[in-house]
Image (cartoon, rainbow, N blue to C red; front, side, top):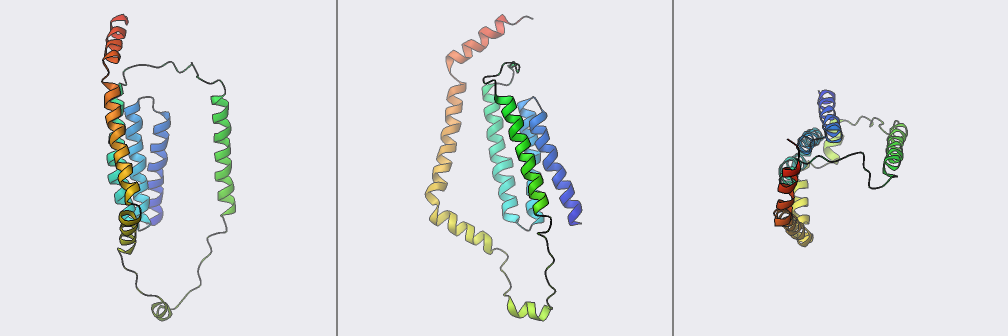
Length: 192
């Protein structure tokens, strides 16, 4: 059953990632990103990391993708760009080299870690019960909360303030009067 869940979640992640890369419409790319993030949440649940799965769905699939869609809608997606014009002539060959390097790293990691999964020696249940204390189910959540809201509370609050500033800046940039005039002027010049 675990293998089936892993295969389905992996297909969700890979399919969503390919959708982000292949789709030309920004809203469709953002929705493909949601599929990827949900697949990662399923993989977190399969690893018994329920808190991380909940954070993945709430923060990333919920808040961050909604923020992306908000920015996409404010900046306008109705303008077509000419993809034949490149700002840097070296960017496509450089991207190909980086892509080949990443694929090489993945293949190397798969080959070298092939023998990393060795079975553990069998231990009788009596010995296992005598040597280990039963773990608390929510201990990792308590440690994470203690660490986040005591040691790193300033960084946590600073991140939230930066996100609010980014949204306000996006709204202000999208609502500039000169941009609205340029869009209406371009619309009048467009052939019907």
